[in-house]
Amino acid sequence: MTETTYKIAVFGAGGKMGTRVSNNLVKTGHRVWYVENSPAGQERVVAAGRELSDAAAAVADAEIVVLAVPDLALAPVTAELVPQLRPGTIVLTLDPAAAYAGLLTTRDDVIQAVAHPCHPSIFLQRETPEQWADTFGGIAAPQDAIAAIESDDPAKKAVVEATVRAIYAPVIDVHWVTIKQLAQLEPTLVETVACMIGDLLNEALQEAVHTMGVPEAAARSILYGHTQVALANGLRGDNPFSDACLIAMDYGRESIVKEDWKKIFRDDELDRNLARMLHLDEITR
Image (cartoon, rainbow, N blue to C red; front, side, top):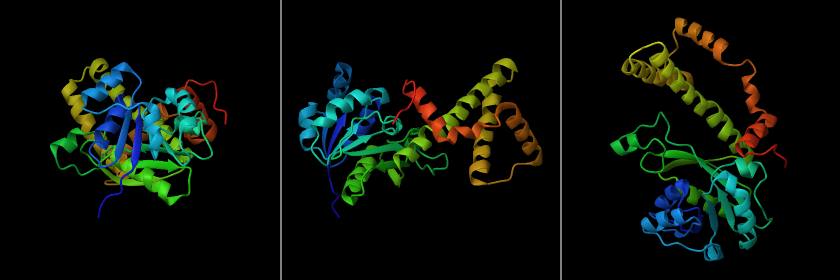
């Protein structure tokens, strides 16, 4: 069966995420326009063998516009771009913060969508060296993606899903949520919690090596192995923690984790978090 192809315009095609997106789209049968304003970004697009398009030409026929630009640039970019779009065009941002905060210029006849990669799971069964090397995703290791769209039209949803599967390829599943739910996942669940814990693990490793004087190779080996066991036991229930470990875990909670830490999942705390990320005094919708 022939895969349905769509007309896709990528803005910010020469940036970090824009390059990743473009590297995958060029492998598909989709009709793609690559737009980049910065001279350095334009050089990267041309060096990659892709043809640059101006914004007006890109949006003239595009069914979906992918905004691979930083969150802080989305407000001025959409203010300039959205008035030029044809009715029915989909505007896809790659992070929910600005969309949830109401910073994007919108139109009733232009459809807003958001998508974000899940990144390859720590439990993914990797089979090749390329998959092992691809910790971020979008190159060789399969990953899921999360998407949201403000439309009930199945045809529009199909355009978004096809685009998401293309730009984050290889993709296993696309999970559909609301824009608010996507904002609750990213940043709250994965950046505020998971990424913070990852950075905390590195801080603890440095303390073990530089303060306690443990040989670094030994500290890394035991931390890396126990991190895998901790995640497998905690997230999948592979094996029960020992009684002694449970006591040490309680001590860790008492010493490190605030009793009211779950407040980060409240709407008002989500707004505070996003306001800080977007350099705003407050979120107003």
